[in-house]
Image 1 (cartoon, rainbow, N blue to C red):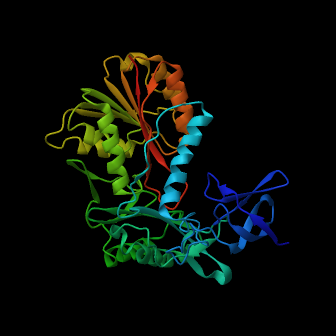
Image 2: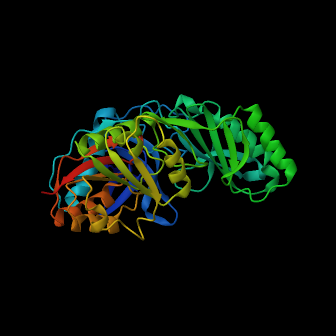
Image 3: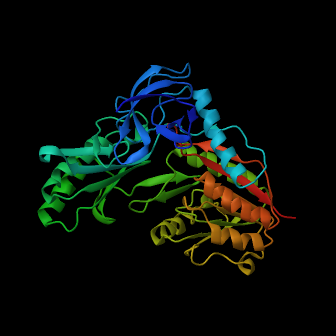
Length: 412
């Protein structure tokens, strides 16, 4: 049954929010003040699907991608930049307020740069056994076939064509595939997951396709299929060879922005610990000015960082494998440390924050991709005697509700 709603505001997930009989209803792709016609969503009594905008907001603009509204990759392309950025900054303010944290929140920094440098495409058989390669649809597990994506870094040119070709070669396995593509400085790095064991003829076919599409490297579940050249990225003064399927910040501009903010907040620290360091986007830059101890649970990332740490001109950088959720660094291990930088996954770093709060490290720099878990961990540090400085939100996931943030905590 269709109904007409008046949207009150945009919620924290990017959906418009309307109120009906005291209950919140969520309508994707709508803006505050709009009158819209909607329909019910089976199994989700608090959600509606947008049928038509009867009275649009003055802030509404035309989306720039033909897949917007079907593909689930972007939630917001229909909002003018200024109110969109104000809303995204407000997400951070609201999360801090929820944790009863009162501090300055700087203006949002746009770090989309040239666009996304890594994507994961999904390949599945659809209706009538027709292959689909693309992103998941909004609100479902269906695949939206993609032949172009306007938010990608130019370094990913050719990624979609290569993914389609690889998926077509593996269609006979009948298995759903995830194809991760990363734009290295010297070509595309591709890792295929989901295929299971393959006969030699299919491995040979994949090798031919890797050559044909001039991929820097092709791996399957992290195992090498073909490498034309090691995929390399620049991090500060270092050149790092990527492990297969490596995690990177979504945009090069985002990584550079977050690193610059972290470095600035470390001040003149001479010994810095980098927790959840990954392949070293902070550690390798910090090592240009200070001695660094880096920790992460991913052995391949640590091995890549150890190799890059040998770059001439860097100060000593020691990288070790350690599960910081199970074994957070304790007070005694941080006794001589001047500053700690930590950038955990979305779930935050509660156990590590508790150990930091109990210690005496003068400066702690928190980097986060989740305002809610950041606020929780920040509250722990504040309750342990730290003072929070300005929180800086960073937008490298433009067109989505995701926001990064950086803040400095000081203890006398």
